[in-house]
Length: 95
Image (cartoon, rainbow, N blue to C red; front, side, top):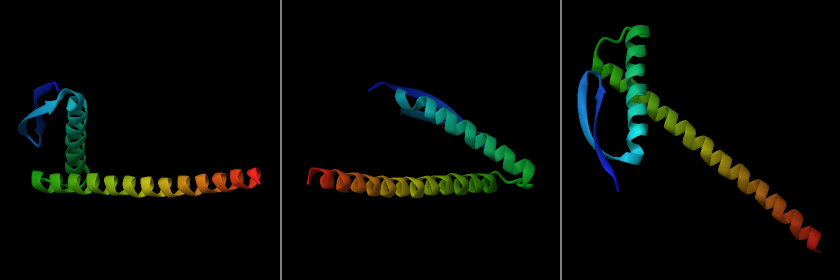
């Protein structure tokens, strides 16, 4: 596994990381998203403390992850129900 040493800067602090090269692009993208969110919170919500901005980022990312999981679970249930109906239809055709 190819590991790279990269540095991600968040809220003015640098974080050196050893990451698999396959994850490098994702980590850089997420780092940029966090920086953009911090800037947005500071400009639009009068957040001056980086700790508060980071807490808001955590809440936003956590909420997005939870909503995605709920949607994924719903899609799995919907797909399972559809497959059961198709299976039932096919079994009736065999009779």
